[in-house]
Structures are given as C-alpha cells and as structure tokens.
Length: 513
Length: 118
Image (cartoon, rainbow over all chains, first blue to last red):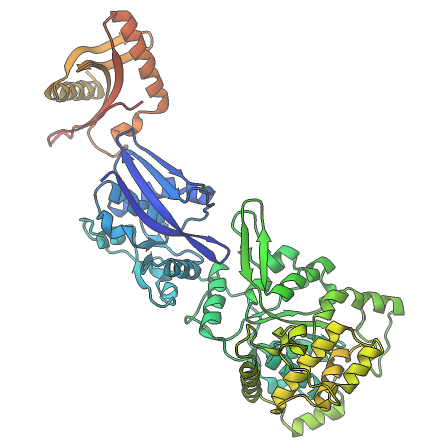
C-alpha cells in the first residue's frame, strides 16, 4: 500500500483540530518531504523520524516519502506529529496495518534513539480528539496519565516507536527500552494557600473576602505596607468552592498547555496567579508569534488573579484586563492566526495609599505631596476600578486588636468555605435557568428588569438617595445591588434589606468615603 | 585492481544480468566522454535507458541510492544527451534509472531497481 494515513491534533490556543497525516511512498531516490504548513520544529521531523526509525529497529524504506498534513492550510507547529508521521511512513511501506493506524490519534515527539518523548498540551489535544469522535489515542508513556484524564477515551501509552509499530501489527523484534520520564518543571506558582484563621483582626476585610468569594465579586484592597493585604488575598482561593468537572478539566488543559505539571491528576481547587508588577501586556494575556501561549490572565481562569502593588504595574498592562473582565475570554490576534482562551477569573488588586505607604496611618507621617498621592492611585484607571465591586481599606492592626484576636480565634478557611458554598447554592437556585451562576455575573438591566431582583422601597432608599445626589453611577448602582444580594445570601435572608444595601454601599465606596 | 573498482565492476555485471533478465537490451557499457561516464545504456521497449549503478557491501555508509545527489543526477542527464549526440542512435524517449547492488562478500547480492528517477 503506497499511501497510508493516520491522525494527530494541531492546537491553536486551547482549541484543537484533527490533522490527517498522509504518507505516500514513491519509487524515487530516497527523500523525505513534509508539506502542509509545518513550522521549523515540525519541519525537522524529516531528520528525526528517519533516524529514530532506523535506531528503533524498524527502518523506513529508502524511497521518496511525501508527508501531507491536511487540512493543508491550517498552520501546525511543534514536534508532537513525529509519531503519526513515522507510523504513516511505516504503514505506507507495508510494515504495519493501514486499517489499524487509520482511526487512532497519535501524539508524541521522537528522540533519535527511537524513544518517545512527552509533549506539552496533551490534555487539550486528547480532549479535541475525543470531541471529534475518536476513541483511541496513542501517546508517550510519560503523558499517558494526563491523557487518561479525558473521560471516554482509550489511552495507549507507548515507550518507543518500535513498541507503537508492534502494537499496530508490525512484525518486528521487541526491544524493551526505558520510557523517557516526564520533564519535571518547577511550578513557579505562588506559595501554598494558608488558613484564613491566620489573619489577626481586620474583621471588615475578612468579611469582604467572604463576600467576594460567595458572590464572585472583584476585590480591591487598599492599605499601608504590613497591613496584611497579600495575606488576605492569598487566602481567597482557599475559601472558594471546588471547581466542577468541566472547569477542572479546563484548568488542567491550560496548565498542560503552559507546560506546568499536573501532579495527581485533575485538581478541583481554583488556581491562583500572582504576576509580578514588571509583567508585560503579553505576559498578562498571552502571546507569541507562532505558538500562541496563554498568559497569567488565562492561567487564572476559574480562579484568582492577584495583582499586588497594582499602581506599580504599567497602565497599559492593567488596562488589558478590561476586556477579559467584561467578556470572560481573551482573543489573541496574530498575523497567521487568532487564538481564543477562557479568562473568567476573579480579580484581586492590592495597593498602598501612596508611594511612601504611610498616608492615613496613625502615628506615622506621610512624606508624599497631595499631588503624588493622587497620581499614584490614579494609575489604576477609572474604567478598571469601576468593575470592582468591593473596595476595602485594610488598616494596620493595632496592639489592642492583636490582643483581642489572640483571645478570639478568627474564622477558619474550612468554616468560611462552608458558608461560601451555602451562599452560592442559594444564588445558584435563584439563577436557575439563566446563563449566570454567581451574583457578580448578573447583568444590571436583567437584575432590575426581567430578574425582578430589585428589592425597592425602604431597602434601597439609601442607595437611591446616593444615585440622586450623583454619589454613584448607574453601573455602580447595579454593582451595589449585586453585592447586597450576596450579603443577603450569606446571612440566609430571602432578599436584601436596608442593612445589606448599606453594607454593600460601604464596600463600594469604602475607599473614597 | 583496487578493491572498490573491482566491486564496482562486479556490481555492474550483476546489474546487467538483472536488466537483461527483465528483457532489456544492453546497448553500451562504461561509455565515457569529457563529462564523465555512463555505467549502462540499455533499450527497454521504445525507451532508451541510462542506468547508474551503485554498489555497496554493507549499509554502514548509508543506502546506495542516498549517494545519488541532485548534482549527480543533473550530470547524468547531460551525459545522456551527450551519448545521443555521439552515437547518433534513433532515440525516441529517454529514461534514467538507478540500480543499487548490495553485494556482501559472504551472501547473495541484493538488487534494487528504480525507474525514471529524474
């Protein structure tokens, strides 16, 4: 059979497309041609595949091999096509069963010794194969556990090209090899999540954190250095509810694509990303000219994006957050492709009140001029701030508060998470039949209109007055309402009362008030 | 005679036997001119075939066909034209073939034949 075909997957962002790998063997002088928009790494498969096949013990025929990657117009990159190319060549030369390789999706890079090396992005690739209706995938041994996370797919882990060929009916002599181990990259992720009970005092901030977790609201913490802003923010993932199966799979896919380890399979804990303030816009959203990689915003999807020292970020970097905050996804456009990533995260930003950090702190003197102070906070642009429901001052803890905190233990993460889960269940019940799942996601017009979630009357009197006076905008009005609903959910109330609305208004205006 | 030349001669004889066995008529062998040498010129039906023979005892230095580079192929085409002009034969179509002879010292030779390689 001079023509054989098999399947592999080309990834563009998180979306994968099935690629048909065709091999044609013609009676010409030995040659190896790969066509169908390969990039440099994929073009080098030419050299890798022939050497690997020879050294593995299943040499390719000394004839002209033409490999076509179809659809030919789709750009393909990386070394993950090696296995599919090698097996298609062997099948074209009659060494393997053509039928056997046809319906199997092959992923993996070949080493010159014929062993299979693990590749990045196995999880999204296998997911794409499963969605396209393929039920068997063959992957490098080191990727097998990750591939097996996709339900309903039979995963065959192989150590070498020879083993793969034998499994497809090749009559070769077996040569056991040691599988190439997975590349262990250090997870540069932020520190382990501590317990909420570690936070001494600061009840108002802990309350705001609980509200943020329950309603999915964005949070702004403003306070002098040492007040515990970073400590509070790092406790947020610990009190968020577990991810559901789809979200966990998406989070794992993004980790896989970023080349981060997936220890112990799917994690149901929300991710926590804390990029440093020197991060560029591309580091934040993702980018790259050929392979489009996800950025911090995408890795924080279904979790928390924490920007410490927010005014130190370049304004252009902060403003790239506006679009994903609104749409929950990010599209990265490059000359040759557009990749779309999920980016539905909870934003937590922390800032000092001024460059010296002492503004408004008792017993210390701020050395900044009023203009400096104003400019410092103005770096966080109005449109961004407007999307943040909870804006909380975090004061330094006093000696008296510390003594009191020692006598009375704070809320533990476990207890806080239980309350968050309960509140989310109530909100979920109310939002049944809508595309939204948390209070923060509800659009304002729906809230006041079709949703009939405007309590009205005395409950919103203070809020209505604030709007009349021009104290808040209409968008701000809606956001206060949403926060009030979350506070009501946490208290087990059926609808927000004047107290909930008042607290929500304070959360919204806490910093400027 | 040097080992390689002797091996080449043995390979060419094996190739000629193979071509004759396939019903081809050998017209010329080791034809030389200023440009180089053609190993075998044969007639296959209406085609005049110019055959490059490569002989090896082992695969250690690669497959014999791998040593036929595009440069050598181009020279072979020029040689074919030169042969046609020099002999004034009635040539209707020309074809360039390659024959690889793997001739180990202790085992029977293995012959591979590629037709129309250019």
